[in-house]
Length: 228
Image 1 (cartoon, rainbow, N blue to C red):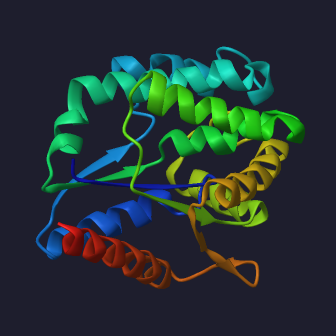
Image 2: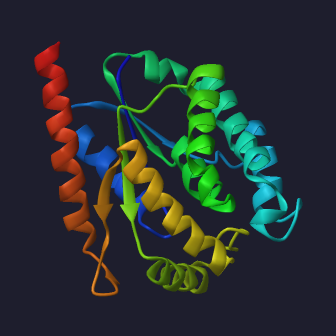
């Protein structure tokens, strides 16, 4: 098995940008890299996710309970894993970098539940995906922390610039605020690498965030090389 890295965080936290920069930097260092991004829109396994996010199952995130919604995203990961990227995970010479993963359910679905159920949900989620379904567990997980006020401002700007329609998570301010709190809890509880991506009510420079991520990844890859 190679090395598996996941980046997650609130909407507009910079996940796609940092995933792309990480892949490019690792390739320049001579590594073989496979990039993933979930949900895999347009693929058969992502149909339940698309129905959920586009509002077909309800205009509010809470219209679909945390466990049902989580299974939609799990199906997307499982089908794509079995039909596509399992070969990359199994290749000891490949680094797989994923923009979102199981960790997204530990943010956006955890936030739907009362806090006294958070630990049991995280236990269920980890067991369901990594034991019951047999999906690979990431070697490194990065949580890109962006305050929801900044996320909402960036989302509005992105929509204005690109015309991209926002999904039911992105349009719901209450959901984003709850998800921010859930993400902080999941990150602390599960031991994710937290990268603070904001300062003084503004995003930090993209290059600074990338450098921080690269330093941590390089350190872990060096440890792995020494072990081998």
